[in-house]
Length: 488
Image (cartoon, rainbow, N blue to C red; front, side):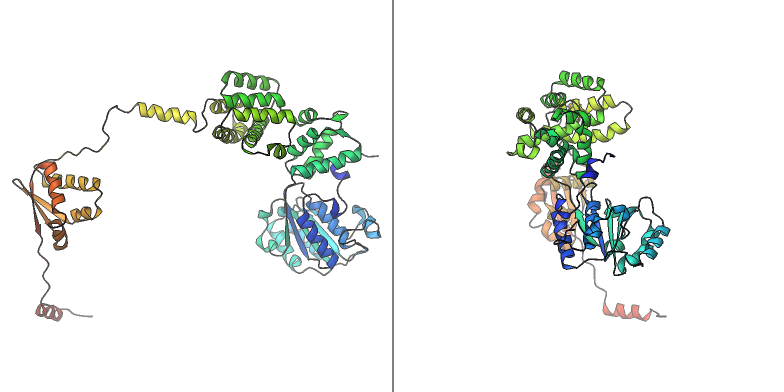
């Protein structure tokens, strides 16, 4: 018999076999049970979260002759038909059929009634790949399809869909599966296959899957034939992950500032053919685990790592600060992009990890040294306060110096009066001429302050005087002016 991949062999046939999408499953089951079927659905979310599986189950359930509270019975004629023989369920790949002709053909065939079931169900995968013209051709049919047609659109990039399509569909967002759910899924599959395993091995596979059920089963498929009893080391070996102990040692050396050990371990791993990009991601994951171990009381439950690994992580967490861990994560995140285009990836990697190793964590040590060097180049014992140089024979120079002193005294009103005044110098007297309103304040409330400033600067007396107010024009002048104005 031809071998089937685990993710195909154990693809769920009913809604009860779906993991982690309870909010979607319950809604769809209720709709089927009550007969309130929508004309168009949009399933969006990350790969491997069950979009196509739920679409197929839904298509089978709406045509089931005896569905059980929304679930297909898997016994009737419609449920037992193979997917390839069920002409009422049409699966289409929009990635290889992007043009407008594809949409027009779909629109024309949708008019025909289903052969055996109540509904003709169109499952369009990767629908975001359709062209704009194809979306426009599909628009009217999607909005008002025949009563016997149901559209299910699946996509991983919902932001690429036009708003006109989004508004015509009932949208469901699929979420990533938790690590505990993925472990539960793996246990069911391995138990059914009769495969022996350790709990640590399952945790390693689930962590690497990053929330995707399909990825989880694909990794399990790769690990299945590795050994008779699957353990954590075998999983790490299949995944190509760097030696667990070597990465932990490197992590500890970086965080404790042991430069010699860092260089030794990096060159050892590089000589073994380890990919530096993968090593960088392994390090980042370990730094994240150390941060969790340092800050979270229930780190064991969150990380689900072997007990010996957790013990080492906690030991590393005790010898470093949170600031250094955050600095390490930031630096390695930048390094991930740099390694893709670097002509000397080993040098770039060593530079990044050594920067973290010699830093205290609060700031980047390289930038700190650069700033200290600049400060050391400054002249010593210099008073950086602005020095006022006044020409005692120039009224303008004296008045500008007065402005500086006013600014230092933080007197905005007095500074405004300064701007409305002019000064002249006659012998040992400074004449300050202001508008009538400014004069009343300068010669009254602020006179002692201004006199004190001038005496401090140049030791001269101050006399305040006011400008003459402008005379208002006489009525007879206005009349005579009016007589000479011609209006056209």
